[in-house]
Image (tube, helix red, strand yellow):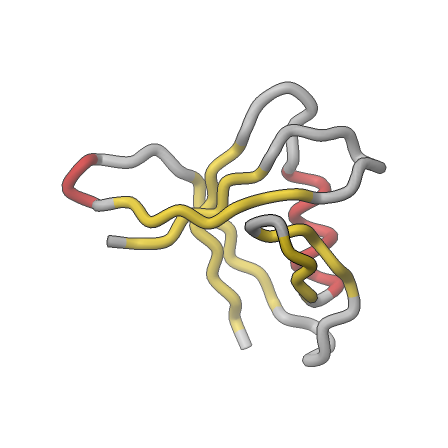
Length: 82
């Protein structure tokens, strides 16, 4: 099993909302992979994750808002390179 980030649809300037879901690799889940560099170590931006505010780094936030689509969910496995 892995955890996938389900990105809710939205425009570039909309509040960023998403949720985590656990999927079994045995079920051949559809997802994309995102690997990013942390940048600054301290979180500086807020997203809505599973209905709650969650702080992320500027680099991750920037990648997520550029990846989000206006009309459909997107599913990501996310990995950080420290």
